[in-house]
Image 1: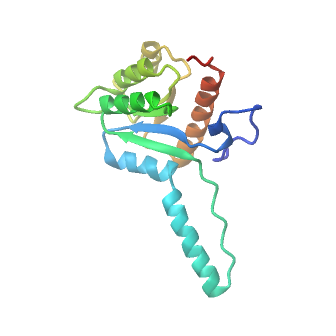
Image 2: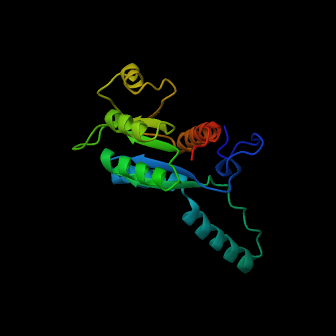
Length: 188
């Protein structure tokens, strides 16, 4: 499975489905190292830009052809270390007209609310939000999580996670979320 955008889209897709606008993702996890891992996986732009500079310098010095930079997903990443902080970010972005499309939510985030309660609050704020629960263990069965959130399409990302699985899941869920939003009748 590739790590890039889908090769075809419906006519007149939303801007994010054409790659002109970043796909907004939030990661809510109480471990700063996990937040940084997601940043490296979903927003490798800074490192890629530096690598391109070094490749160009090497090419000019040694006459080599620089390796083209890999196509990276256009994600805009938000992070929070507690559930209520993440809910506030999602609400603020929704009000600004720049909604977050996907939330990766850790199951356990002491001392605050847990991942299931966080997900329930996020869905109350934005019912169109896609959610992936991330955990190495859980206090709930997967059936209990789905039943409580009323979202049978909910996805699970086990920890430790593979970077390819994160990118693939982010592409899949942001695409689904953007299409859902595009199909929603506009009010106002």
